[in-house]
Image 1 (tube, helix red, strand yellow):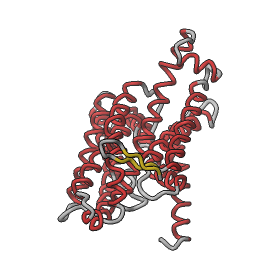
Image 2 (tube, rainbow, N blue to C red):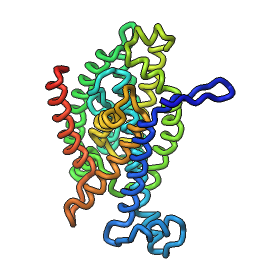
Image 3 (cartoon, rainbow, N blue to C red):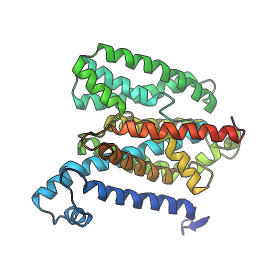
Image 4 (cartoon, rainbow, N blue to C red):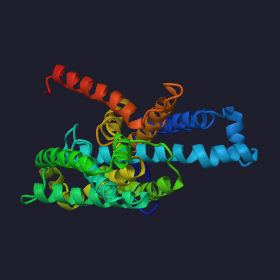
Length: 342
């Protein structure tokens, strides 16, 4: 571990292996991104892509890269980073490897708001706003139901799973109330799709990551490591556990809701990225930065698989993450059982 001290007395502890994992994932995301920008019905070499990004491409190349492909790529990376960062925060706060927003009802809550808009015939902008508002309302409901002289991780998980089951049923009922064409559009959104995503989807999430993500990475990492030791131990070491839990839950729910508003409820990225980051860094704690970088890489790569695996047919990216994430979850449960932890 490297400790940097500033003249003002502040200290910053850095783990070289975690930094290397984060930097490697970021570099791989850029490589996959350049290949993605050059792939499609109008193929371009990596040199042409880089030249176009620098502003020297032809008008046709500029339109294809900057207007068609780059917004989708940036949206994928931002959604992956936001989901992974939120998943790392949730898993540390509840001290449970299955503490993912996919399983605790927050993505289902965002989907409920979006489906209500579909049923009443709202616009795409209304759908995104409703997804964010509904996701935050679900977070508040889960927190309130789990409160009993404080909120503890085990109770939060149980309440979240129950709320997720209820909202899944509500979402199914809303689908039956929607007109046929709107229901088909809603099912595609519920699967998780990046098709047709533009800067209007990417910019709100980028702003949230630049603000909330930076605060979480810079200020909450050490406190989260103490919370993983248990509420009593963290409180004894001076961590305001309940205030920290409420603030971080609100931040993570907002990130998940914005990600759902941009691409629908993409499953398993929030669950798998923190696990993989922890295994790669071989370090305890939330591993926030490696998780975010790995989440961006996973979703950018999954979107390429969704677009190119079956020539002539594009899959929603949520199908790819569901298949890969489901397999990873089965492997994780099997390995935990072999280790005697289940």
